[in-house]
Structure formats: C-alpha cells, structure tokens
Amino acid sequence: MDELSRRHLKVARKLAWGCVLMFGFGFALVPLYDVFCQVTGLNGKVTGRGDVSIQGVDHSRTVRVQLTASNNEGMPWRFRPKQPQLTVFPGETRQTAYLAFNPTARDMVGQAVPSVSPSEAAEYLHKVNCFCFDQQPLAQQEQKEMPLLFVIDPALPKHITTITLSYTMFDITPQQTDKVSLQNPDASRRYTL
Image 1 (cartoon, rainbow, N blue to C red):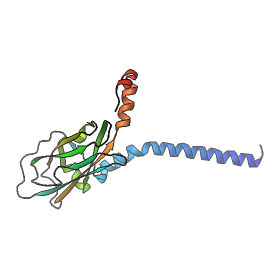
Image 2 (image 1 turned 60 degrees about the horizontal axis):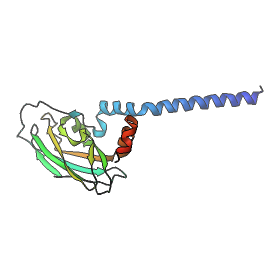
Image 3 (image 1 turned 90 degrees about the vertical axis):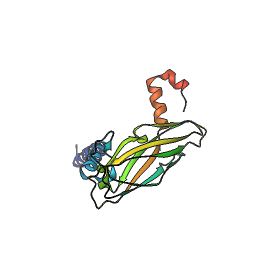
Image 4 (image 1 turned 30 degrees about the vertical axis):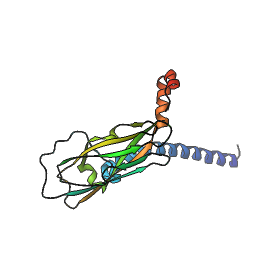
C-alpha cells in the first residue's frame, strides 16, 4: 500500500468514527435535553401532575392565569380555552376547560402538550386533572369540552403575578392507526380513523 492509499484509509476511518459519534450524540440528545430542562427549569415543562396536598389558600394576593391554545402544523382542529384568563388565589383549586372541534370528515386523535411561562412558575402549577393526561379522540364534526383542574402552590415566588399556560394540540391519528395494526392485524381492517 502506498502512502496516498494509507492517508485515504486514515481519513475514511476518521470519517466513519465521526459518523458513529454524531449518531450517538443525536440519539442521546433528547434524554440529555430533558435532564437539562429538569435541572434548570427551562422550557416551562409542567412537572406537577395529579393530586396535590396544599395547606390553605393565600387570600392576600392573586395570580393572573392566561390560557392559550395552538395547533401543531397540520392539525385542523379548532382548539381554544373556554376562558382565556382567570384570576386565582394561590392554593385555590380552579376548574376551567378547553374546547376542541374536529371540522374534518374523518375521525381523529389529538394529544395536547402543555408549557408554562415564566418557566420558573412551572414547578408551582399543579394540574390535578387535565385533558392533556390522555389522548383525545374526536369523531368527524364532533365538538368536545375538555376539563382542566389546577392549583397554584402558595409557595409561588411573590414576583410572579402572571402565569401563561399554553397547550399545543398534535395530531397523533397516524400513530394510533399504526399501534392498532401492530397489536392486532385483523383489527386494523375493522378500525379506521
């Protein structure tokens, strides 16, 4: 093997290792990002979920909760909060709802993903019951009221007076069809979304 062939082989090995390392980094990126967001509190991921025991209501102050809704690209539903803004006392359990309408001529399944801003408030917003915990199937032309029950921890820092709770609705219909066909091939013939 001459010198030029050895250099080419050396470069090819380096490129192959570079590809392997980039693939490994890309594969590990999502779990690393989740850990980073959990440690730093960035991205406003809501961690409070399910029953919560909060002792008393703080009537000395109020917090404005703004509710917003958006659809991910390609999601045709009409999706909005029933009340775009609430004023709550920290420690007070509040109930509201979001409205969804499927204007298409096919049955669909949606999944809402929450986000809170400022991100510092995410750990103090506890969702006791939320439509985002479950997938939301809607038949063609069906409208649905989806409940949200939440409480803000009285330990919320005093400088936070407004919290924005945003939901993005994703169309997960294709994934549901794939799950059904993988679990029971005969059922996929009967089950159409």
